[in-house]
Image (cartoon, rainbow, N blue to C red; front, top):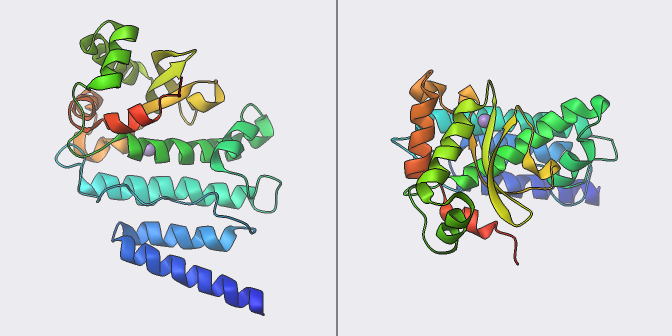
Length: 242
Ligand code: MN
């Protein structure tokens, strides 16, 4: 009985927090709740994080409608499915990153990997964007881009090319590999954290990331993200400490 009381209290508090945190939403609030229900105990490990900004904060480059569906429905579904798949297994209770790394490369764990990696990638994507972002960075990021690519313009060309050449669904990334910045792309749910690379920022190039706003024009979406939305502070915060 006391345990039930405690759990009820926690669920209720989480719900109130979610509700207060915003209309960001009902989708987010509900997924958060289902996360609580599915957890097998211990600290929160897999859950739909709230957006670091309001749903309309990235307009006019990414609409409120796109963010609402992308975060609440697409990202939320990956999180819910991950929770279903790990329930009652040794993976329950692990961090999302650990789940991704422990299921990578195992055919019988492909579904868990895909959903967990997509959950991780989306969390990273929301943080890679910010209102008033984009353009040429300053300071350490500017120095690191110059060192690796020769110039910001060259970096921009490489990132654009990685985003555009990804056939079908996937991601374009700026990563650190062996202390050097590098642009890579990944297919579907694949993520640099299974390749020993440290991601600095990412662009989601699945159609659901841009179709409502840009239809087939991925290039316009990518251009706007690079010029107006990249969160360079976040990218810099991900640089490994030398
Ligand atoms: Mn997506």
